[in-house]
Length: 190
Image (cartoon, rainbow, N blue to C red; front, side, top):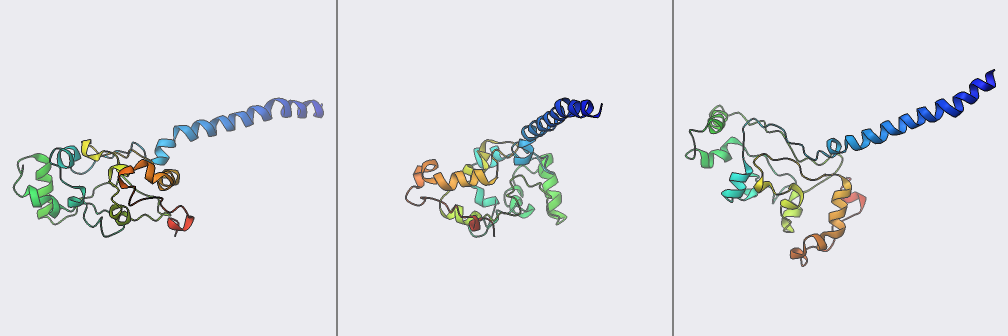
């Protein structure tokens, strides 16, 4: 009787259980890939801001608002004072600009939600990439056409390595400045 019960467990229940676990893993892995990669992440911001107008239609350079990117690791998030360089005069009657003016006069930072983020365990330096002439579009997508910014690419290791190994193919206009990016572990994992 025990042998029959054990045979039934081994022949029926174990394969069903293993199959169920593997199926659940595979489905979960693929269903959550975008969330793990943050691709498509598009949070609602405290002030509606259109990059399509500012970077697109008005052709304002990324570095005007995201200061320090050519000198430091980080691209700063614009403070109300940077926005007020233009909006102290321009479109002051619009509701979103009224919010901005409020932040500015109350001396409060705008709590923008970060969209593009390299994992904490990886080192990334914007200034090195900017100095090589790599356009923001290569990592951040065509932000100048986005009314609402969302993450278009994964910032996972494979994406970075693919670019570092094939930079001369991806950006032939920079072939005199870029051959290969570093691919040794210590370049990013410090």
